[in-house]
Image (cartoon, rainbow, N blue to C red; front, side, top):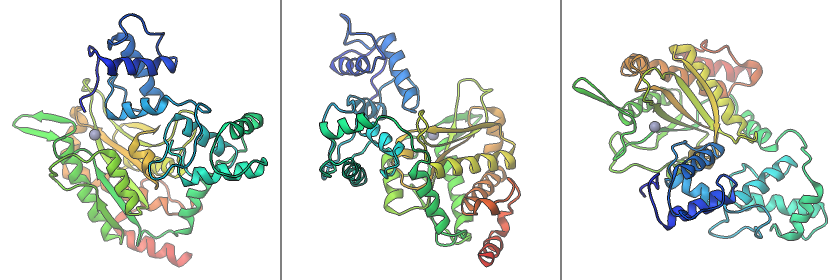
Length: 387
Ligand SMILES: [Zn+2]
């Protein structure tokens, strides 16, 4: 769908404005409530910022889904585990965050009322003496309000994710890594002409992904790319996440390049799942930190740090997932490096080292930049012997 943008008019704009007004981001609608004016754009930007979406002031598919889900405030409707089309919305997310804070196992606060959320609600109901039917209606809401916000400390999903990693042992052999070269097909991503050449994010990231695939496969890792070099169409991020889930991937790495109108903007940044109020994927955050530090140490790209985002790609993936923006294609400095295959090999080494370090117990971790990935097999073998 074409994004709804400033200057547009019509019933869709009225609807967007109504939701934004309900969220207190926009003052009550005036006579021109079907007009996407400057105030609407400001409100859309504020909304996108608060939800960790790309801030462009337009309502595309992802922002629309987030707006649609944001209509629901916790307590406004009864929540239950609906099959096959589960309930989703901001109220589900609020409930999940409350349950997580209280130490109940809902998995990730993904705004989807699935079986785990339903089980966690049933457990809560049992403990407060309600019928454990797993649905959240007025009685359960009252019980939640009575208990109030007491944070138990130690979010259970952090512990569980890192437990799973500890149990899987230090070896990369047999792990499944899904690599996601961004864009592709009808969507080239960032495009920068350079003399007679034309650099595109989609092509450069596919090349990087293929190199990474080769290095990981040589270490005994099962690798799957989300797309080929020139697909017919561009796979949406939701499908990429679901693909990784269906493959039972252990790690998901999405590769992108950044771009900016200002050619001075440069550097590498890594994103993991998380919200502004501190709900995060601990293993995703750790992987992001490792990838970011290894790339900075091995390439000298400017450090634009790691950031928590609720992008669908990161939210829907059930394994540690990161999106790396490996430099700015619009920066002459970054671009000169990115178009050099030897540089891309250094990025590959950095990512392989980071993935390897994910599977080292913290106490056996090694300093950033020190892992020689060309001897990965030996390192892995040595690690296995110590175990
Ligand atoms: Zn991109």
